[in-house]
Image (cartoon, rainbow, N blue to C red; front, side):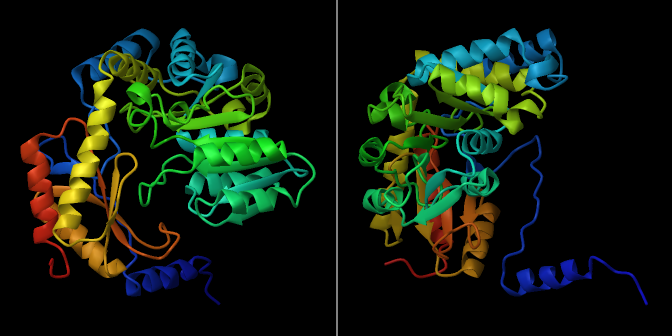
Length: 382
Protein backbone atom coordinates (compact mmCIF):
# COMPACT_ATOMS: atom_id res chain seq x y z
CA UNK A 1 0.00 0.00 0.00
CA UNK A 2 1.51 3.31 -1.07
CA UNK A 3 1.94 6.11 1.45
CA UNK A 4 0.82 9.43 -0.05
CA UNK A 5 -0.39 11.72 2.76
CA UNK A 6 -0.59 14.81 0.54
CA UNK A 7 -2.60 13.43 -2.36
CA UNK A 8 -5.50 15.56 -1.18
CA UNK A 9 -3.53 18.68 -2.10
CA UNK A 10 -3.66 17.71 -5.79
CA UNK A 11 -7.44 17.29 -5.52
CA UNK A 12 -7.73 20.74 -3.96
CA UNK A 13 -5.54 22.22 -6.70
CA UNK A 14 -7.78 20.74 -9.40
CA UNK A 15 -10.88 22.18 -7.73
CA UNK A 16 -9.26 25.62 -7.54
CA UNK A 17 -8.28 25.44 -11.21
CA UNK A 18 -11.81 24.42 -12.23
CA UNK A 19 -13.23 27.39 -10.29
CA UNK A 20 -10.70 29.84 -11.75
CA UNK A 21 -9.24 30.56 -8.30
CA UNK A 22 -5.59 29.60 -8.73
CA UNK A 23 -3.17 32.11 -7.24
CA UNK A 24 0.41 32.42 -8.44
CA UNK A 25 3.47 34.38 -7.40
CA UNK A 26 4.73 36.96 -9.88
CA UNK A 27 8.12 38.33 -8.74
CA UNK A 28 8.72 41.97 -9.59
CA UNK A 29 11.89 42.93 -11.38
CA UNK A 30 14.06 45.89 -10.41
CA UNK A 31 13.69 47.38 -13.87
CA UNK A 32 10.78 49.03 -15.64
CA UNK A 33 7.48 48.13 -14.03
CA UNK A 34 3.87 48.66 -15.11
CA UNK A 35 2.03 51.73 -13.87
CA UNK A 36 1.23 50.66 -10.30
CA UNK A 37 -2.36 50.87 -9.09
CA UNK A 38 -2.14 47.51 -7.34
CA UNK A 39 0.05 48.21 -4.31
CA UNK A 40 -0.96 50.00 -1.11
CA UNK A 41 1.69 52.70 -1.54
CA UNK A 42 -0.95 55.41 -1.17
CA UNK A 43 1.42 58.33 -0.68
CA UNK A 44 4.08 57.14 -3.12
CA UNK A 45 6.71 56.93 -0.37
CA UNK A 46 8.10 53.41 -0.75
CA UNK A 47 10.69 54.65 -3.26
CA UNK A 48 10.98 58.23 -2.05
CA UNK A 49 14.69 59.08 -1.76
CA UNK A 50 14.32 60.37 1.78
CA UNK A 51 12.53 57.22 2.95
CA UNK A 52 15.00 54.89 1.21
CA UNK A 53 17.89 56.85 2.68
CA UNK A 54 16.40 56.55 6.17
CA UNK A 55 16.13 52.78 5.72
CA UNK A 56 19.74 52.51 4.55
CA UNK A 57 21.04 54.66 7.42
CA UNK A 58 19.15 52.57 9.96
CA UNK A 59 20.64 49.37 8.54
CA UNK A 60 24.14 50.85 8.63
CA UNK A 61 23.66 51.98 12.23
CA UNK A 62 21.77 49.06 13.74
CA UNK A 63 22.49 46.14 11.41
CA UNK A 64 20.47 44.09 8.96
CA UNK A 65 18.19 42.45 11.52
CA UNK A 66 16.71 43.11 14.94
CA UNK A 67 18.65 39.99 16.18
CA UNK A 68 15.96 38.84 18.62
CA UNK A 69 12.57 39.44 20.17
CA UNK A 70 11.75 42.93 21.40
CA UNK A 71 12.13 41.79 25.03
CA UNK A 72 15.61 40.35 24.48
CA UNK A 73 17.74 42.23 21.93
CA UNK A 74 15.20 43.30 19.32
CA UNK A 75 14.34 46.74 20.71
CA UNK A 76 16.52 49.63 19.61
CA UNK A 77 16.37 53.33 20.39
CA UNK A 78 14.97 53.69 16.86
CA UNK A 79 11.98 51.45 17.72
CA UNK A 80 11.22 53.61 20.76
CA UNK A 81 11.54 56.77 18.66
CA UNK A 82 9.07 55.48 16.08
CA UNK A 83 6.61 54.46 18.80
CA UNK A 84 6.71 57.92 20.39
CA UNK A 85 6.24 59.70 17.09
CA UNK A 86 3.45 57.38 15.89
CA UNK A 87 1.52 57.87 19.13
CA UNK A 88 1.95 61.63 18.98
CA UNK A 89 1.00 61.89 15.30
CA UNK A 90 -2.12 59.73 15.64
CA UNK A 91 -3.24 61.25 18.96
CA UNK A 92 -2.73 58.31 21.31
CA UNK A 93 -0.92 58.00 24.62
CA UNK A 94 1.37 55.16 23.59
CA UNK A 95 2.26 52.79 20.73
CA UNK A 96 3.92 49.40 20.29
CA UNK A 97 5.58 48.32 17.04
CA UNK A 98 5.24 44.77 15.68
CA UNK A 99 6.79 42.87 12.78
CA UNK A 100 3.57 43.21 10.73
CA UNK A 101 0.09 44.64 10.84
CA UNK A 102 -1.18 41.06 10.93
CA UNK A 103 0.81 40.42 14.11
CA UNK A 104 -0.50 43.65 15.62
CA UNK A 105 -4.12 42.59 15.11
CA UNK A 106 -3.46 39.13 16.55
CA UNK A 107 -1.81 40.74 19.57
CA UNK A 108 -4.60 43.19 20.31
CA UNK A 109 -7.39 40.66 19.91
CA UNK A 110 -5.79 37.84 21.88
CA UNK A 111 -4.27 39.91 24.69
CA UNK A 112 -7.26 42.20 25.30
CA UNK A 113 -9.94 39.48 25.34
CA UNK A 114 -10.19 35.87 26.51
CA UNK A 115 -12.49 32.95 27.23
CA UNK A 116 -14.88 35.12 29.25
CA UNK A 117 -15.05 37.85 26.61
CA UNK A 118 -17.27 38.65 23.66
CA UNK A 119 -15.88 40.02 20.40
CA UNK A 120 -18.34 41.60 17.97
CA UNK A 121 -16.76 41.64 14.52
CA UNK A 122 -17.91 43.25 11.27
CA UNK A 123 -18.57 40.74 8.49
CA UNK A 124 -16.24 42.67 6.18
CA UNK A 125 -13.21 42.66 8.48
CA UNK A 126 -9.74 41.71 7.29
CA UNK A 127 -8.50 38.12 7.59
CA UNK A 128 -6.06 39.11 10.35
CA UNK A 129 -9.03 40.19 12.49
CA UNK A 130 -10.87 36.97 11.70
CA UNK A 131 -7.84 34.94 12.74
CA UNK A 132 -7.34 37.05 15.87
CA UNK A 133 -10.93 36.36 16.91
CA UNK A 134 -10.39 32.64 16.47
CA UNK A 135 -7.14 32.61 18.43
CA UNK A 136 -8.55 34.73 21.26
CA UNK A 137 -10.82 31.91 22.45
CA UNK A 138 -13.46 34.54 23.09
CA UNK A 139 -17.05 34.12 21.98
CA UNK A 140 -17.32 35.87 18.62
CA UNK A 141 -20.43 37.37 17.04
CA UNK A 142 -20.06 38.29 13.37
CA UNK A 143 -22.53 41.06 12.53
CA UNK A 144 -23.68 42.56 9.21
CA UNK A 145 -21.32 45.01 7.58
CA UNK A 146 -21.22 48.58 8.92
CA UNK A 147 -24.28 48.09 11.14
CA UNK A 148 -23.96 49.77 14.58
CA UNK A 149 -27.40 48.58 15.68
CA UNK A 150 -26.39 44.98 15.02
CA UNK A 151 -23.33 45.60 17.20
CA UNK A 152 -25.56 47.02 19.94
CA UNK A 153 -27.84 43.97 19.87
CA UNK A 154 -24.88 41.58 20.00
CA UNK A 155 -23.32 43.40 22.97
CA UNK A 156 -26.59 43.16 24.89
CA UNK A 157 -26.28 39.36 24.90
CA UNK A 158 -23.12 39.43 27.06
CA UNK A 159 -22.63 40.69 30.58
CA UNK A 160 -18.84 40.47 30.85
CA UNK A 161 -15.85 41.95 29.03
CA UNK A 162 -16.65 42.84 25.45
CA UNK A 163 -15.01 44.43 22.44
CA UNK A 164 -16.25 45.54 19.04
CA UNK A 165 -13.70 45.34 16.23
CA UNK A 166 -13.79 46.86 12.76
CA UNK A 167 -11.61 48.01 9.91
CA UNK A 168 -11.65 51.79 9.59
CA UNK A 169 -11.61 51.49 5.79
CA UNK A 170 -12.53 48.14 4.29
CA UNK A 171 -9.98 46.84 1.83
CA UNK A 172 -12.44 45.25 -0.58
CA UNK A 173 -14.75 48.18 -1.44
CA UNK A 174 -12.87 51.07 0.16
CA UNK A 175 -15.85 52.17 2.26
CA UNK A 176 -15.37 53.60 5.75
CA UNK A 177 -16.83 52.23 8.98
CA UNK A 178 -19.32 54.38 10.95
CA UNK A 179 -16.80 54.93 13.74
CA UNK A 180 -18.65 57.64 15.68
CA UNK A 181 -21.79 55.51 15.89
CA UNK A 182 -19.80 52.41 16.84
CA UNK A 183 -18.00 54.32 19.58
CA UNK A 184 -21.33 55.45 20.99
CA UNK A 185 -22.64 51.89 21.01
CA UNK A 186 -19.50 50.70 22.80
CA UNK A 187 -19.68 53.47 25.41
CA UNK A 188 -23.31 52.61 26.16
CA UNK A 189 -22.40 48.93 26.62
CA UNK A 190 -19.15 49.50 28.52
CA UNK A 191 -17.27 47.73 25.72
CA UNK A 192 -13.91 48.48 24.13
CA UNK A 193 -13.57 49.53 20.49
CA UNK A 194 -10.69 48.18 18.41
CA UNK A 195 -10.16 49.78 15.00
CA UNK A 196 -7.75 48.54 12.33
CA UNK A 197 -6.69 51.79 10.65
CA UNK A 198 -4.43 50.15 8.05
CA UNK A 199 -6.16 51.91 5.14
CA UNK A 200 -6.93 55.15 6.98
CA UNK A 201 -3.51 56.21 8.23
CA UNK A 202 -1.92 58.64 5.80
CA UNK A 203 -5.17 59.23 3.89
CA UNK A 204 -7.88 60.23 6.38
CA UNK A 205 -7.84 62.86 9.10
CA UNK A 206 -5.95 66.13 9.34
CA UNK A 207 -2.70 65.62 7.44
CA UNK A 208 -3.26 61.85 7.30
CA UNK A 209 -3.53 61.25 11.06
CA UNK A 210 -6.03 58.48 10.45
CA UNK A 211 -9.71 57.64 10.68
CA UNK A 212 -9.88 57.77 14.47
CA UNK A 213 -8.42 61.26 14.54
CA UNK A 214 -10.90 62.27 11.83
CA UNK A 215 -13.77 60.93 13.97
CA UNK A 216 -12.52 62.64 17.14
CA UNK A 217 -11.91 59.29 18.83
CA UNK A 218 -8.11 59.15 19.01
CA UNK A 219 -6.82 58.85 22.55
CA UNK A 220 -10.10 57.71 24.08
CA UNK A 221 -9.77 55.42 27.12
CA UNK A 222 -11.86 52.68 25.57
CA UNK A 223 -10.36 52.96 22.09
CA UNK A 224 -7.43 50.99 20.66
CA UNK A 225 -6.08 51.27 17.12
CA UNK A 226 -3.97 48.94 15.05
CA UNK A 227 -2.22 49.97 11.87
CA UNK A 228 0.37 48.90 9.36
CA UNK A 229 3.57 50.63 8.34
CA UNK A 230 3.45 48.99 4.90
CA UNK A 231 0.81 51.10 3.19
CA UNK A 232 0.91 54.89 3.44
CA UNK A 233 4.30 54.84 5.16
CA UNK A 234 5.81 52.67 2.41
CA UNK A 235 7.72 50.39 4.79
CA UNK A 236 6.88 47.17 6.66
CA UNK A 237 5.56 46.31 10.11
CA UNK A 238 2.59 47.20 12.28
CA UNK A 239 1.64 48.89 15.52
CA UNK A 240 -0.95 49.00 18.27
CA UNK A 241 -1.88 52.41 19.71
CA UNK A 242 -3.86 53.11 22.84
CA UNK A 243 -3.72 54.09 26.52
CA UNK A 244 -0.33 53.49 28.14
CA UNK A 245 -1.64 50.79 30.48
CA UNK A 246 -3.08 48.89 27.51
CA UNK A 247 0.25 49.02 25.69
CA UNK A 248 2.04 47.87 28.87
CA UNK A 249 -0.35 44.93 29.06
CA UNK A 250 0.51 43.94 25.48
CA UNK A 251 4.24 44.02 26.26
CA UNK A 252 3.64 41.48 29.00
CA UNK A 253 1.00 39.26 27.41
CA UNK A 254 0.83 39.50 23.60
CA UNK A 255 2.38 36.35 22.15
CA UNK A 256 3.07 37.90 18.72
CA UNK A 257 5.14 40.51 20.54
CA UNK A 258 6.89 38.35 23.13
CA UNK A 259 7.83 35.45 20.86
CA UNK A 260 8.44 37.20 17.53
CA UNK A 261 11.66 38.76 16.30
CA UNK A 262 11.54 42.55 16.38
CA UNK A 263 10.96 44.57 13.23
CA UNK A 264 14.17 45.00 11.22
CA UNK A 265 15.90 48.36 11.77
CA UNK A 266 15.71 49.30 8.07
CA UNK A 267 11.91 49.00 8.15
CA UNK A 268 11.76 51.04 11.36
CA UNK A 269 13.97 53.73 9.83
CA UNK A 270 11.92 53.85 6.63
CA UNK A 271 8.64 54.18 8.54
CA UNK A 272 10.07 56.92 10.72
CA UNK A 273 11.41 58.76 7.68
CA UNK A 274 8.03 58.49 5.93
CA UNK A 275 6.15 59.69 9.01
CA UNK A 276 8.38 62.75 9.31
CA UNK A 277 7.98 63.48 5.60
CA UNK A 278 4.19 63.26 5.95
CA UNK A 279 4.31 65.74 8.83
CA UNK A 280 6.12 68.21 6.55
CA UNK A 281 3.93 67.49 3.53
CA UNK A 282 0.41 66.92 4.93
CA UNK A 283 -1.16 67.66 1.55
CA UNK A 284 -0.22 64.18 0.35
CA UNK A 285 -3.16 62.75 2.31
CA UNK A 286 -5.80 64.87 0.57
CA UNK A 287 -4.16 64.27 -2.81
CA UNK A 288 -4.50 60.49 -2.48
CA UNK A 289 -8.20 60.84 -1.67
CA UNK A 290 -8.75 63.24 -4.56
CA UNK A 291 -7.09 60.84 -7.02
CA UNK A 292 -9.36 58.03 -5.79
CA UNK A 293 -12.49 60.13 -6.31
CA UNK A 294 -11.37 61.10 -9.81
CA UNK A 295 -10.69 57.48 -10.78
CA UNK A 296 -14.12 56.48 -9.48
CA UNK A 297 -15.96 59.29 -11.24
CA UNK A 298 -14.29 58.74 -14.58
CA UNK A 299 -14.78 54.96 -14.54
CA UNK A 300 -18.41 55.06 -13.40
CA UNK A 301 -19.09 57.91 -15.80
CA UNK A 302 -18.01 55.55 -18.59
CA UNK A 303 -20.44 52.86 -17.44
CA UNK A 304 -18.54 50.69 -14.98
CA UNK A 305 -19.86 49.88 -11.51
CA UNK A 306 -17.73 50.97 -8.55
CA UNK A 307 -18.24 51.90 -4.92
CA UNK A 308 -17.50 55.57 -4.21
CA UNK A 309 -14.25 55.57 -2.22
CA UNK A 310 -14.02 56.95 1.31
CA UNK A 311 -10.22 56.78 1.26
CA UNK A 312 -7.81 55.61 -1.46
CA UNK A 313 -9.29 52.26 -2.57
CA UNK A 314 -11.39 52.12 -5.76
CA UNK A 315 -13.29 48.86 -6.21
CA UNK A 316 -14.66 48.08 -9.69
CA UNK A 317 -17.12 45.21 -10.05
CA UNK A 318 -16.42 42.32 -12.43
CA UNK A 319 -19.06 39.90 -13.75
CA UNK A 320 -17.24 36.76 -12.52
CA UNK A 321 -14.06 35.49 -10.91
CA UNK A 322 -12.75 34.32 -14.28
CA UNK A 323 -13.44 37.64 -15.97
CA UNK A 324 -11.81 39.52 -13.08
CA UNK A 325 -8.63 37.47 -13.48
CA UNK A 326 -8.63 37.99 -17.25
CA UNK A 327 -9.37 41.72 -16.87
CA UNK A 328 -6.49 42.14 -14.45
CA UNK A 329 -4.16 40.19 -16.75
CA UNK A 330 -5.21 42.28 -19.76
CA UNK A 331 -4.52 45.47 -17.81
CA UNK A 332 -1.06 44.23 -16.90
CA UNK A 333 -0.34 43.28 -20.52
CA UNK A 334 -1.27 46.85 -21.43
CA UNK A 335 1.14 48.26 -18.84
CA UNK A 336 -1.15 48.78 -15.83
CA UNK A 337 -0.96 46.77 -12.58
CA UNK A 338 -4.27 46.50 -10.70
CA UNK A 339 -5.46 44.24 -7.91
CA UNK A 340 -7.88 41.38 -8.41
CA UNK A 341 -10.20 40.40 -5.55
CA UNK A 342 -12.24 37.21 -5.86
CA UNK A 343 -13.57 34.48 -3.58
CA UNK A 344 -12.61 33.67 -0.89
CA UNK A 345 -11.05 37.13 -0.42
CA UNK A 346 -14.42 38.86 -0.93
CA UNK A 347 -17.09 38.13 1.69
CA UNK A 348 -20.02 38.78 -0.68
CA UNK A 349 -18.67 36.53 -3.45
CA UNK A 350 -18.55 39.41 -5.95
CA UNK A 351 -15.23 39.63 -7.81
CA UNK A 352 -13.63 43.02 -8.36
CA UNK A 353 -10.70 44.89 -9.74
CA UNK A 354 -9.11 46.89 -6.93
CA UNK A 355 -7.36 50.11 -7.87
CA UNK A 356 -5.34 51.99 -5.27
CA UNK A 357 -4.92 55.71 -5.71
CA UNK A 358 -1.51 57.25 -5.12
CA UNK A 359 -0.75 60.83 -4.18
CA UNK A 360 2.16 60.94 -6.63
CA UNK A 361 0.21 60.00 -9.78
CA UNK A 362 0.41 62.56 -12.56
CA UNK A 363 -2.53 63.72 -14.67
CA UNK A 364 -1.18 61.69 -17.58
CA UNK A 365 -0.91 58.54 -15.44
CA UNK A 366 -4.47 58.90 -14.16
CA UNK A 367 -5.76 59.23 -17.71
CA UNK A 368 -3.69 56.24 -18.84
CA UNK A 369 -5.08 54.13 -16.00
CA UNK A 370 -8.69 55.02 -16.79
CA UNK A 371 -8.26 54.36 -20.52
CA UNK A 372 -6.61 51.00 -19.89
CA UNK A 373 -9.29 49.76 -17.49
CA UNK A 374 -12.03 50.78 -19.92
CA UNK A 375 -10.29 49.33 -22.97
CA UNK A 376 -9.85 45.92 -21.30
CA UNK A 377 -13.27 45.74 -19.60
CA UNK A 378 -14.92 42.32 -20.13
CA UNK A 379 -18.35 43.82 -20.83
CA UNK A 380 -19.28 46.62 -23.21
CA UNK A 381 -19.07 50.01 -21.53
CA UNK A 382 -22.10 52.23 -22.13
